[in-house]
Length: 83
Image (cartoon, rainbow, N blue to C red; front, side, top):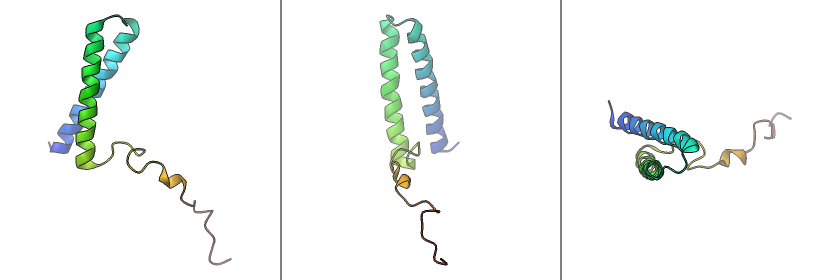
């Protein structure tokens, strides 16, 4: 398994744990230990995201470039040369 694949697997695992904690906290909001654990996993996820993105690029299309493609002309907006 490549370093990229290992990092992606770590990201997926932390995201899963974070989501499960989120669901648990929906029904147990006063569990301070779970709140603390959720915060730890959030920090870990942010660190892993930064590590991945610095090595391999953005994880989502909206990171990095933003939505610059929206300001580009669409194919039907460009003037046709044969008109």
